[in-house]
Amino acid sequence: LRWEKSEYDGSKILQVRAMPQAPVVRHPFTGEPAWWGSMHSHAEYLRSEREKVFGDENLAEATGASRINKTDVYYADTGEKVEVERLKHLDKVTMEVAVPVK
Image 1 (cartoon, rainbow, N blue to C red):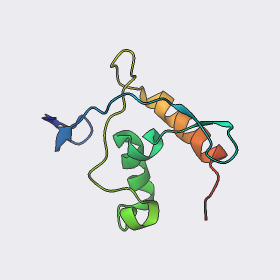
Image 2: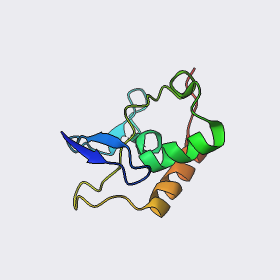
Image 3: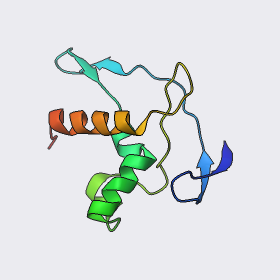
């Protein structure tokens, strides 16, 4: 854990690095491989872009996302930040193939 300055808006943020996790897991019912990731929800850039469109009112209630878990997203093998264009692409694909759960 360490305090840093956000590159996006200059605010003070707590930097946390999570342990690497496998991006592909087995679906618990079908056994099919499934990509499991939440970078589209937590990436600071993508969240900030959504807030510009939808506002930040009731964000937690509408999406389950809290204000505290916005973070930069890094490649596990190099430690480099995931590029904005790649974040946009992953977000687009995620939203296209997401399956609502009731």
